[in-house]
Image (cartoon, rainbow, N blue to C red):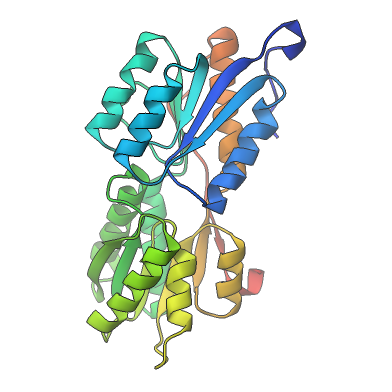
Length: 289
């Protein structure tokens, strides 16, 4: 756990720390929330909010939080001009903002805490090339085209394939909004529309729904899958051989670090040495489960 440098709560009323995730019912963010709580809950009143992948919903929550008397905000932002506009009241009140897991580079944020999405995408491309022998017809299932980290993973993936695996061809890119029901339906449609599809790359959530669709195929097909994050679903489908490999981001450590960075600034004005704090990724394979 990161070394705590928080105010002594016994000296008075706790300051308020806002946390806003652009995702609902995703265990990844549950783990990230636990990391934030482990660092900050003794010294802050932490206000947690989660919205679906909706610019309107995130703007509404930002508007509410801007009036909640916060001392700081940890945010997974949607990349949209309206979000930037709704951050203006925070700047006016000198409320520091740390973006987590996905960035908003145009925002006046204190720091970004997470993984390097572009490098993650390149690593995903290398992994999928290895498990397919460098030849495949691929569909990318992403969360949202308005999430910076998802777009970075797509860009890194494409660049790696173009530079190293020209026989890996991307046939389609679809958004599932990290929703398993949507991913299930879209995967079934992909399988019908692309009968020679041989690989799937997930940049974010929706993995359980899509893997369920693969598991229920009436005519078995050899489809390789690379995804992100270590959840019970990931372990289940790795064991079944449906997921070939998963990249792990360590959301708990990200949550702790984001809370530490914003707390140090609130407490004594200490800024991090860099405005992009990257965490390394690791790879999970079937024999490691």
